[in-house]
Amino acid sequence: MKSFLMTFAQLLFALLMYCMGTIFFGLALFPSIALVFKVWHASYQVALWIRFIALGLSLGAGFFLFGLSLVILIGLVRTILFLRLKEGRYPIFSWEAVKWACVSSLYLLINFTFIDFILLTPFANLLQRMLGAKLGKNVQINSKFVFDASLLEIGDNTVIGGGAVIIGHQVERGFLKLRKVRIGKNVTIGSNSIITPGCEIGDNAIVGAGAVLLKNTKIEPRGLWYGVPAEPARPHHSQEEVK
Image (tube, rainbow, N blue to C red; front, side):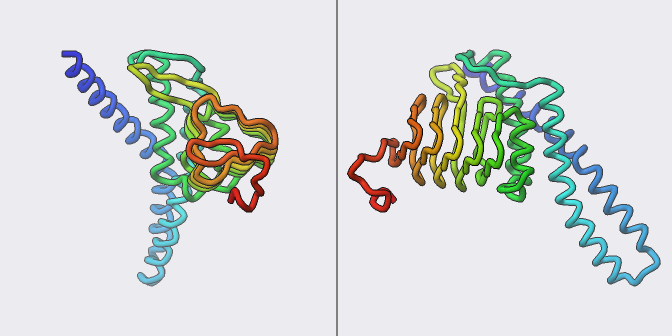
């Protein structure tokens, strides 16, 4: 019976998320559809091939307009509803778990449609800030796997490498555990590395490419960590050897 109820709850939640996706996509598409409609009707007196070119250009512009509209819309909804995650240990069927699922679903709407086009641009930082992240100046984010934004703090001039995974949640034995991830200033997070809940990385530290930081790992300022699981580089290792 318990298994049936869990399956039913998952199905119900999935349907609710589909409805939410329909609403968000539909609203974000409104400016794009208006643009395409306007261009098509404004060009009715010109040659058909010119109308087709104009239609193609408006469709292309409409895609980017849709993506940026989606970023702003999702950020505003998250802010208005104050869906900020709090550190703690919560049952899977709890309000905090529902909030986490909703915020994660909002992020996935962008993750699967448009985020590749905003990486390493100010729009990526805008998205993370609107989702609740605390970012310093000149942060460079080159990964779409930066989750749980309201549990994330990143200092000035830090670089998040391509494909790096940063998560602030973990599900264990029927409980959702939420922990903040704190990354200092001038930090380099290598490509395809994994930063797990509760990790704290000091200023000027380097996490090597492909490294996996286990939960609650603390890295000292100027530390160099690499490997699976990640460990500090030994003093006699040169930086060239570590690479």
